[in-house]
Length: 328
Image 1 (cartoon, rainbow, N blue to C red):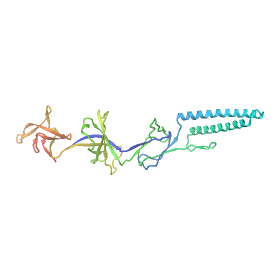
Image 2 (cartoon, helix red, strand yellow; image 1 turned 135 degrees about the vertical axis):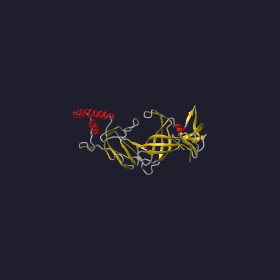
Image 3 (spheres, rainbow, N blue to C red; image 1 turned 60 degrees about the vertical axis):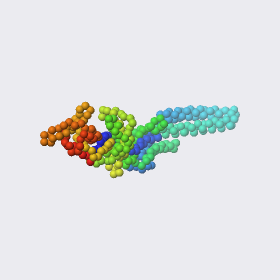
Image 4 (tube, rainbow, N blue to C red; image 1 turned 180 degrees about the vertical axis):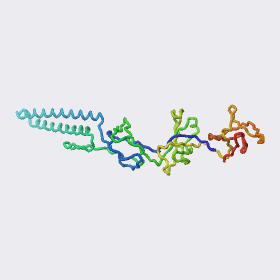
C-alpha cells in the first residue's frame, strides 16, 4: 500500500540564466537559434550601441559649447593680431591666442566626432573626414549549454543592465541534461511532504514510463491558484534525465510517495460507511445467507481508491463490497 500526493507542473532546467547586455542599443544580429548547443565564449548576438537620452543631451551641449568657444577664440585671435600689428600687444600674447584657438578647435573636433557617433545608425559606416568607425558590441555565452529561448527579434531595442535596472533579457539558456520537476501541491496535502521523498514523474510523451526524482525544495509560502481555485504550494524535485528524454517545458505530473506499508490488510474505500466519526464495514458472517454485521474498523493510509485497515478485520474476511486483501 502506497500513499501518494499528486503535484502538477512541468519540467524545468535546474540551472537557467538570462543573458542581458551591458550596452544599450539595437539587436543587430543573432548567431544562435533556439535549441542550439553552445560553448562558453561562443558568440550569441551583436548590439548596435545607442546613446541614452542623457548621453545625447550631454553630447549636443558639448558640441554647442565648443562651437561658441571656437567663435570666441577666433575673435580673440583677430583682435590680438590687430593689436600686435600696431605694437600694442606683446608677441607672447599673440602666441597664447593662437594656442587657445588650437585647443578649442581640437575640443570641437572631438565633440563633432562624438555627436556623429551617436547619430550614426549603421555599423561600420565611416566618416572619412573624422576617420570614425562605429563598432558593435558582441555578447558571448558565459557557460556551455542549450539555448532555451530568444526573447527578441533582430532590430529590437535593448535596455542596458545598470545598477538601477536589470536590463532587457535577450536570451535564456542552461544545461538541459540537469533538469527538475516544478509543480504545485494542494494546501491540504502540503503537511504530508518533506524533502527527500521519492517523486515518480510522468509526462504525456512517454506513456507508461516513470522518471524517478527526489523532492529537494518545498515552498514555505503558498499562493492562490486561479486554475485550482485554492491555495497551492510549489515543490521541486531533482529528476533523473540520464537518457535525455525529458525536454524543458514538458507538462508533467509527480506522484510523491509520502508513506508505504507492506503486509497489511486493505479494502476498497467503497466498502466503508460512517457513523459519526467512526468507520464501519459490513462483514459477511454467513456466506449461505449473506448475513452481515456492522463492524467498526480503524483505518490507516489510503491511495484514494483502497485503504489500509489497521484493526477490526483480518485478511480473507468478506465484506459486502468485496474481500479483504492482504497487501504484500
